Length: 420
Image (tube, rainbow, N blue to C red; front, side, top):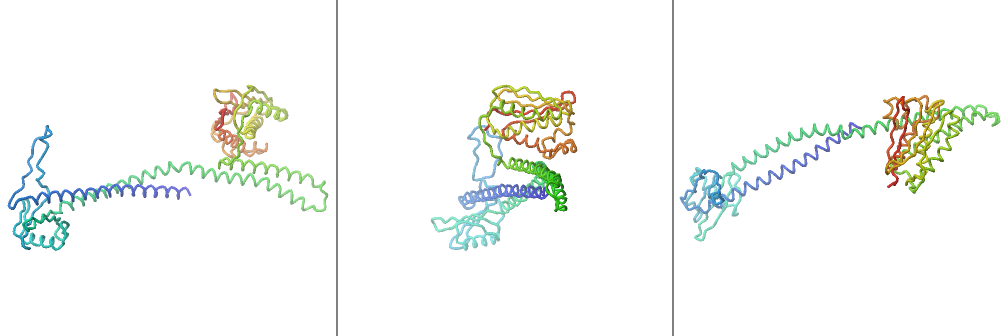
């Protein structure tokens, strides 16, 4: 899939760049064609004003002009090969080549005849490679100026070849640039794709375990159909326990899926974070006592913020549950709630074994567990911290963790007081 996306990205880039270059070069060629045609028209109009036998002025090289008046030059000078044919009663009576070109009488007669037969005052004689401009005088004579198109076609041909060369080199350059950009642009998509595949694999694995237990227990129950329920209670309790764990896993997965899709229902209102944190702490006193963990707290009073009470309560419970699980026997968990400038700072510290540095960047990934066997034995799925991060991000906050052997492990959350 990623390779197909990368290929489509490169093709799309090349097509768009090719269209832009085609439009730019097309405009450049068209404007130059028009400019060359206009230049020929100007020279032919000037040639029509020549008197018979008159030789137009030659270009004179001068030093660079300093005064504005000196910058003017004689516009009658022609850099385009031009000659004029005078016709009277359908016959060529004179040919003025301006001293610039050699024109045979046969060529002049043929050009004049084709120009007259065209019935137009101006146009192109493609067979002869000439442009013409016709003028009828008051005495009935017709003067036709002809301009050679060789230089014009050569200029256009050179320009087109240059555009094709530059365009080809540009497309090759953009191809390699697109290769680099595709690798950079699709890196997040590739990472997301890999995470999705890992997520599906992990979710399938986690669902497989309780389902296997449930199927095994129900198989045992069905194999003793005649036994009373009381005799089968052990297997039914195991089945119920696994079903409850699976239900919690599915609920967590649905919560994360809705968070990813920005569909998590929110009920933001003003909340006393001090009271909410104290209530969560009281609920964990018995849990800490059973785990032989000391629970300390430092909660600043009257701290309020705008947010979803249910989600914030779940956030505090996740951090406390994580702290108690990893504090170890005779460990200590310290919860601190304080104000930090315009934010509320919530931190949960435990004195358990430090988290290896290589695991810290992955702690908030779904199903990630630095100690897989330990968490599984405690009923976890590796989704708690992922849910905590999702809640914090939903409330426009930040969450991070530090862990050392000397200072212990501390999860810190910064929440803005106003949610918007």
